[in-house]
Length: 209
Image 1 (cartoon, rainbow, N blue to C red):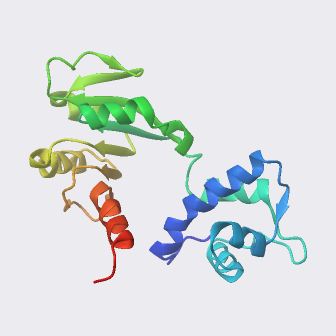
Image 2: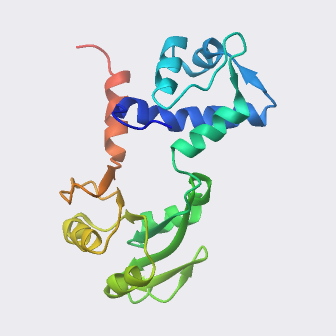
């Protein structure tokens, strides 16, 4: 499995491949050609082949792709079977909504804990997840090495919290704070800006000036 020098565009298409192949598998599709797969995803056959060739050779001439095998390969490429763990920083409205509605396990993550500053929330169990005081963060991470921190704290606390996470050995931050974080190059940060998607849609539906 090759991962060197894979473009960001290809990486961001991988979850789309995974979702689509999962749907095909559930529908009982056994094999599919690159042409058919591309057509159903709005991509060209050559784009499909080029993307997948970054990681190996998965298809067979005249046969196409075995859907189950390709879905399993992409599962491996995405690291979904590596037993990643995650914590949530900020158990307010957004953090609680993620705990209640986002299925971390479907993406290969186990949500192990949440942290907050509110005495009304600390000590509670929300959707099966224990909420700790943020003062306990470093002690918890020292005994429970964690892959990713989901950051849903207020903007004013984002930078300081990111620094604490970096010093505690977190590998990645899923950042919902609407703040650009500047952390160690060894830490991967995935920024989620809800407004960006809405503004993109606004542009797309706006009449030409």
